[in-house]
Image 1 (tube, rainbow, N blue to C red):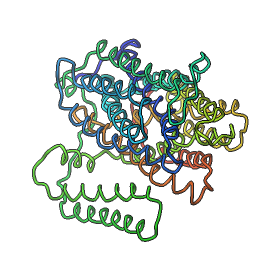
Image 2 (image 1 turned 180 degrees about the horizontal axis):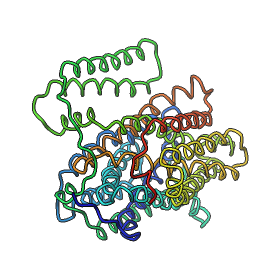
Image 3 (image 1 turned 90 degrees about the vertical axis):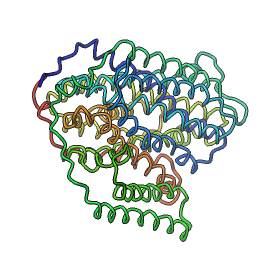
Image 4 (image 1 turned 135 degrees about the horizontal axis):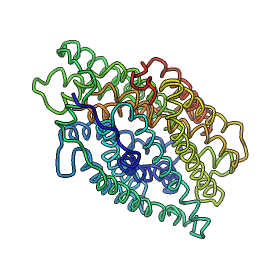
Length: 493
């Protein structure tokens, strides 16, 4: 077995540079889509459901892209064709989104945008695992976090910067301001060019070379117990059906249909797995899901609570800040649009702090290890979200973003470093896609229950959703202690 050669700083730079563009588009989406929905007439309780496109497309697209990218080899390599095709469609969607004439068009465009971003994003995670030896992977994922931070700083601030430059920040009722439109146009160009840089400036190992360099232990697939799988699938299906029946019977919030639908869909997937005799993409992904390594199972819980918190922040920060810190509820008012622009600045700030944190994270890992470093970082994020409840001057919310930035950089790097050493090379793509389930599922749960919680428990105050996010990050930090520290990470680099 040959060892992978260590890459230089600039080689790692080039292979991760495309993430700057991907995150540029992702940050524009996160900071402005709720604003676009509200401008086009969405009610506050509708917004989580309108956001459902983002996690649902990731749930479907990423494991499929991972499955096929593991089996791809072209002139562009293994992962790079997916980088390129996803970037083309994501850039086009960024041009369309701010010109949506109606709410349903904006919601549909979000599906296209998020699906395209996912096509590019999923192989980037596997790309680091493919190209880097185990001891360099924390640095590789931290470099991705650095570019995520840098791209998001500019993208999140663009409407605010454009307003400062004199571009119109308000528009007629139902129209998107020019600040948002021009930000999305620039975002489409940056996304395509940055991903194109990585496609042109990197090379990939052929599959046979990757296999010869593989250090991960082989995965053992136990024979499928079809009867047990069918019983479990039936139980999940019944849970989903009972959930739907309860919503109908008791007149519960309709957003809860999403959660019940996910339970039922997983039950159907297990029943199909038990029934199908031949091997195909679906049965392979389901079999790999059942055989995933123990580290991945434990990290799934960490990811669930981490991404539930992030989704709560992305959905409700605009409403929380415009309502509490700027005293505005009318999406057409100048105060609301000033507050929404300031949320873009706050999102830019946490991504800027994430870029700085990405520089510090390799040092933290060498000193404390992966688990303790992640615990510290997500708890800093919890403190940052909680501080929204006590800070009233919007300028001081920049301090809150320090903690959120450290958490964001850590969430985007350390779980993958904890995971990648346990994944075999020929399954790196599909397992990174399956790992995305545990990013997507909490977002689906959040989209299902946050609107209900906001009205039924949290007194209709969006800022309380940020407190729920803080609690979720605190739990994620505790759960990471259950994950075994990889041997490669325990050794000094």
